[in-house]
Length: 306
Image (tube, rainbow, N blue to C red; front, side, top):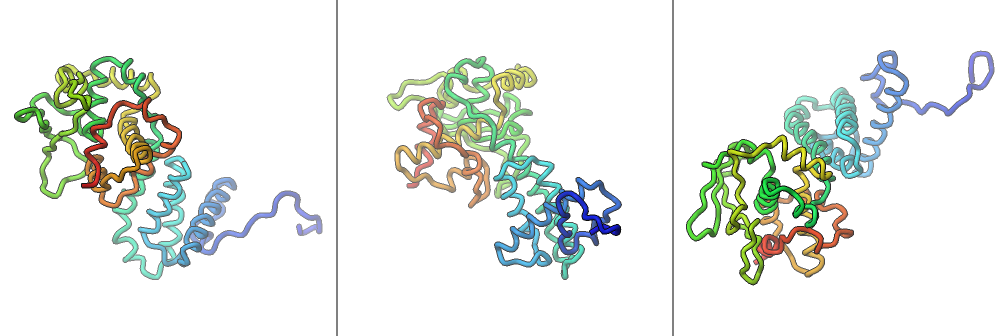
């Protein structure tokens, strides 16, 4: 009730979550911003309550799990970052062990930012066979190389022709990676591409990285700006290659009722052991017709459990 005895109109305001006003003074923000921050705090508290964890005892790993759940619900990048940092500030303010919290926070926060960014990657458009066949030969060679190697585009954008070495009998191609997102255990930047896309009857396909006549890109003549324009004009992105392979893998498993080696899949994509990224990249695979995708049968066949 107001001071003059007249009831205020409108929806009643929910009380702030415990600890909120200590960190966010009402006079410092607009009403919309305050209400939004209150909502994100309540949502995080519910997430922790379902795990029977008090919000004061939240660890950085729980923030990572929460960010992953937000990403799975298609929240935009900035919304995920805002929600995480708001709750982190309140938790740190009231944490009984703030020093222990901050020890692991920096690396966890970097993982959260990568995960939030990865949402755009996992929702990239899938490359269908007819679209791939309509591309210029330069773009086709890049796309096929990314499909069969599992590499990110950033790993080959600075590549030179001298970085490639076709080994004897064309059983594999050695590639020196100038830019890499993770450092392998043996500190080697050389990888072997052994996947073939030729037909099972032995017919050599031009696009095959190992045996094709025009598969390996001529990096001395690659115009990346022009290729990206062509790719975007088709409604695709460089992450479409990884999503296409992930979708093919899930559909192949379902149709042929086979079990693929999870470690081999993670090695192909450069993911950590036990990663859930395959499920994220392959979302919606149930509605995709396998015959409409590029022929990756031999690639996926090599991922079977032995």
